[in-house]
Structure formats: structure tokens, C-alpha cells
Image 1 (cartoon, rainbow, N blue to C red):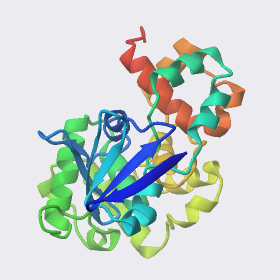
Image 2: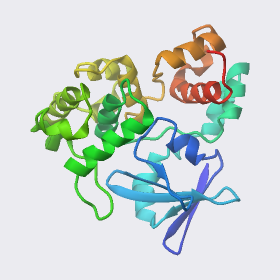
Image 3: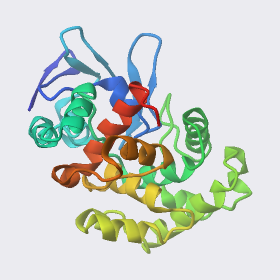
Length: 277
């Protein structure tokens, strides 16, 4: 499904299933990636900073990346061991999903750090991408660790002892109390995010919804983008409208085991083709 070579301190990735950087990194899955003036995407995950770009021949270059970092972080993060070609073959049994999959080639599900994902999607509620990124940046700069040019995402333990007044610097509004409740429940072990990887999608959703301010959509985003529940299907008003236009509200049966991947394709297809929703 992929191969990687290491040369001159960089990793050169060839992904047979495709890896579209802008459509994967800037589609609302994650909020710490940005495009630099030199054409490189830069961001951080699992305590590591990364810059990457795509060559004209389709090779993705991961800069300053050795074999250990690739094998221990980026292979999992970019979901490289999942056979998207085979999954797309299943999805394409439905003609509408076939169009969406062809249009969305190269979008992959990011396997993110669970606490960061939970906190980020709490912040994302009733918010736009620019403001979400700004709040998360202030969160990292004020409460994360200075890693020399970038800041780590603060741990739940670090945030759990803070007050809403401490978080005023974030300018996150009503979300501050939800961030603190999440941090305290995760820090205390009341919510065990790693454990939720091994339960059903429904059980993961129900557990996450015990956190103040976490509803079905945020819970499903966390389950899909960090807890390995590829069958999670986050629904906001926009995707509900797209589903009604494309599928009369019901996802085709063949797509349900891979509902999260189908959701990303449907969202991108409907947005880019400007469906009348």
C-alpha cells in the first residue's frame, strides 16, 4: 500500500492509495497544520514537529524524519496501513459514493492523539476554522511546553488544576468550562480514552458524552479521528443536509462499516461540487 525510503535525513513516501495533503490536513479533522510560504505543510503530533510536501511525481517528503519517527508515529498518524483501495472498492458499489470517492481520492483519516482531539473538537463547537486554530494556538502557547520554535499541546493534568479565569487568555467563551471538565475527567481516569479504543463505537460515544458540552457530533469526531472507530459518522447540520440530498438521509448498507471514510468523502464532494443543500 505504501513504500518509504530514507535519504539525506528525510523520508520519501510513495502511497499507492494516495495522500492528498491539503484535503487531509485542512479539511476539519485536525487544527494544528498550516501551509508555509515555501509550499510545505507544518504541524505537530505526538510530541513531534513535522514539515512535509508533495513532489510533482506524487512522492510525499517528510522532512527531518528518520525511520524510528516514521514507524512509531507517522505511519499510524496518516493511516498508511489501511487499504483504502479495497475500502473504496466496497464503497463504490453505490453509484453516488463511487462519484464521491473518485472526487475525494487521497483523503485519509488521521489517527490523532486522543486528548488533543477531544479538546480540539470541544473548542470547535459553533466556531469557524480560523478561530478554532487561534484558540488552540493560544492554548498551546500559554499552557504547553516550548519545544524550540513550536509548543506542545498541554496535557489534561496541566489543565485540570486551572480555573475558568486562567483560561480567559484563550478567548474561548463558554467552551472554557467544557475544556476544564474534560481535562478533569481524563486526568482523574473517570474517562479513559485509550480504553475507549477497544469498545464499540456506541459505547465510545456514550462515554464521551458524559463530559459537559460533548454531544453526539463531537463524540463521533473524537471516536473517528483518534479512537480507531472507523464506523463513526459525525453529523452536523451541513452533513445531514448533504445526506438528505444524496441518499435520502440513510447511508447505504455497504458503507456502514467504513462510515467515517464515507463521511469524509461525502462532505468533501458535497462542498466542492456546491450541491444545492
